[in-house]
View 1: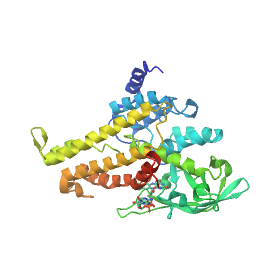
View 2 (view 1 turned 135 degrees about the horizontal axis):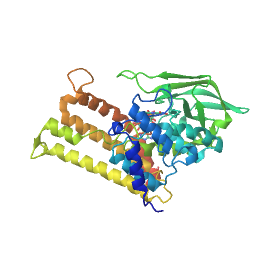
View 3 (view 1 turned 30 degrees about the horizontal axis):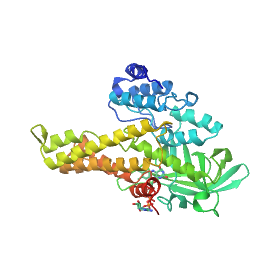
View 4 (view 1 turned 180 degrees about the vertical axis):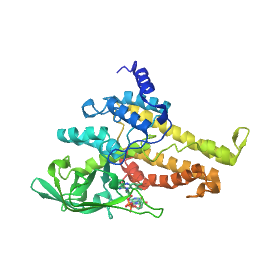
Length: 392
Ligand SMILES: Cc1cc2nc3c(=O)[nH]c(=O)nc-3n(C[C@H](O)[C@H](O)[C@H](O)COP(=O)(O)OP(=O)(O)OC[C@H]3O[C@@H](n4cnc5c(N)ncnc54)[C@H](O)[C@@H]3O)c2cc1C
C-alpha cells in the first residue's frame, strides 16, 4: 500500500492541532471519571485527537478510530515522537480490553464499549489476580454460577490497579469447578457500580496506592457481558496479556517508561565532566551500553511491526520484549541513582530537588515493571516453553 503523502498529511495535522503547551509533557488521560487532567492545552489536544480518531488510530472509524494501517500508525507514532507530543489516551481501556473486545467481542459489545473507550469516557481495570492466584493465574477461585440469563459472582480480586477510580472491570471467573483448571474459566465484563461489588484501596508502606482489593458478594451479571464463550476465557485472558505486555514496551504507552529522562545529562552534572564526557569511565560505559540496548530494543520493536504482514505484531514473543524492556528500565534507574549518589535517596523534604525526589520515586516505582503483567520469571518460562520450544 502506498504511503505517499501520508507523513506530510500527519505532520500538517499535528502542526495545526497539537498545542505547543503539551509538547514534552509525559501524560495522558486514562479515561473515565476523575481522570481528566486539569490542563486546558491537554484537554484541547485530547479532544482534537478524539475527533480525528487518533486516541485509537488503528481501530475502525465506526468505533472511534482512524482506521490506520499498521504502517500508517508507525508513521503517526514517529511524528508524535518527533514533536514530543504525549499520547492522548493511556490505560487498560485503550491498551488491554479495547483490542481484546475488538478481537473477541460480539457486535453489540463492540458497538457499546469501543466508542466509549476511544472517547475516554470509561476507565477500565483488570480483575485477574487473587490472593491465591498471581503467577498461577489459572488457580483463580472467584466463582460465577449460572442463573438463568445471568451469572452470580462471589469471590475477590487483589492488586486491581485503579479500581477505586474505574467504571468497569474485566474479570476472570470460574464457571466450571470440575473441569481442569484452565478449562473452567470465563471472561466477564462488569460495571463496578453493580450491586454487591465493593472496592477497598490497599495502603502500601509509602502511604496510599493505586492498588485495590475488589470484593464480589452475590453480584448478578447478565450473560450478555460474557466475552467469548463460557469456559473458554483462558485463551482470551492470555491474548489480553499479550496486548498488556506489548503496550508496556512501547515508549510512552504506559507508566513504565523506558526513557525516564536524561541519565546522560544527569551523570554529567552530578559526576562531572572530563573532555566533554562523563568523568567516570565505568559509569560512562554502562550508560552508553544501556542507551544502545534501549535503542536496539526500540528498533527491534519497529522491525517486528514492519515484518508482521497482517499488521499484528502482538504474539507470544511479546514476553521477550516485556522482559527485556523492564530489565532495561530498572537498569537505567539504577544508573541514575548511581550517578546522583546520596542525592537520589530522598523521599521528601527541602534538602532534595524535585528532580532528585522524582528520581527516587521512579526508581522504586519502576521496579514493579518486573512484576506487573506477569513477573520476569514467568516471562522467561513462557519464552523457554512457547518461543524456544524447550520441554517443561
Ligand atoms: C504495579 C503492579 C500493578 C498490578 N496491577 C494488577 C491489576 O491491575 N490487576 C491484576 O489482576 N493484577 C495486577 N497486578 C498483580 C500482578 O499480576 C501479580 O503481582 C503478578 O502476576 C505476580 O503474582 P503474585 O504477586 O501473586 O506473586 P507470586 O505468583 O506469588 O510470585 C512470587 C514470586 O515467585 C516467582 N514464581 C512464581 N511462580 C513461578 C514459576 N512457575 N517459575 C518461576 N518463578 C515463579 C515469581 O516470579 C515471583 O518472584 C499488579 C502488580 C503490580 C506490581
